Amino acid sequence: MAAVTPGDQAPSVEVRLVPRKLGLGALVFIMFFTVSGGAYGLEDTIGESGAGMGLLLILVTPIIWAIPSAMMVAELSTAMPVEGGYYRWVKTALGPFWGFQEGWWSWITSWVDMAIYPVLFVEYAAYFWPDTFGGEGSGLARWLLGMGVIWVFTLLNIRGAKIIGDTSTIFGIIVISPFVLLTIFGLFDINFNPVEPFTNPGQSFTSAFAVGLFVVMWNYLGWDGVSTVAGEMKDPRRDYPRMLLITVPLITLVYFLPTLAGLMAVGTSEVEWTAGAFTTIAELVAGKWLGFWLAAAALVASAGLFSSLLLSISRVPFVMGEDGYLPKGLMRLHPRFGTPWVSLVVSSLIYSVFILGPFQSLVVVDVTIYAAALLLQFAALIALRIKHPNMRRPYRVPGGWLGIFVITLFPILVIGLAVYFQAYYEGWQGSIGLALLALATGPILYPIGKVLRGRRGIEDDDELPFELEEAVE
Image (cartoon, rainbow, N blue to C red; front, side, top):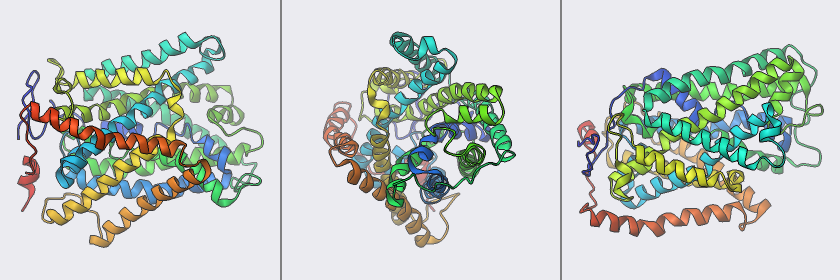
């Protein structure tokens, strides 16, 4: 296996950044922010789908969406703990064409996704400084603050994964604490049946389910994200499954319990369940101080989400540049910190452009493109089971082929239902159409990627990465 060191631009089979510093504790909180960042944003599920349906979606979605994805990721990440994660899995299992689609789709998804969090930071800042960041006439101040979030955490990322792990741990404690207090206060102030109304007046079960599904899916996606920094983990084969075992129930509880407590305490008539409702609920059940804490934690959550996601997604264009599909400048490492600083800067420049437009509202586009990339990972899981049945797999999806079938079927059904309902209620010309156009850019750009590889003298190869070859019995 070839390793890339600072200043080394030679192509290699696997890139390993230096040094390995991410332990289990840091990984838990990086994953927490890669997927969640707290219950912020879930309020719209209650407001648009009804109390009972919202709670049902929060509980059911991890069973049919998050847990199958986490099990797939656990097997692949322990079988192939390589820098670039899911991009490497798909490229090895399905070939370079599909590997390119996986990497490209994942990166362009981030263009929309990553623009959301600086904008959210600005929205939450308006709680404290409404004259500066809220209302009319504050466009420049809002833009400067959003840019500040992007570039402060880009600089932190350039300093290395260890500092992101440390800050994510601190941020995680700050974010989770007020939700714990909200849950305690809410459960001791029960005034309403939390599942009534089950759906909003005049809303059918099907439409309520359809409206809330994409929102909850978005709040439960990203379990594969941290796989891209496997080369920077102390012991990825041991720690990745443990991290997933901790974070899946942790995130589910952080979503469900405050929502349940809020519905019991204030119901749906006293509060408008939309973005920011948890701050109002906290003020009603405990006082201004808890509302202030939740609002401050929302600022931290937005920053933590951007920081952790930038850590993971920046490794994708980095390894694609190393493989020759993107310009080779993306694989440059910082001479002091050994981080992919060019990939980080280029990604953040793109996000700086996207915060200027209304792209943050395109959650459906984000989820649809991500879902396509996720399905390729399930295909890679199946292909590697067929091609390399004796590969060393420290974690193996239980149940043999039946287990593989079940964990693959559920996400396919969820994605199919979500796309069908969205197309049914909005039409194919809406968000789904935009997502399909974005997906089409992958096959269109692949020939250009092959030309770039050819100019650098890199030929397609089918051999396994060294670590995987060594694991085959």
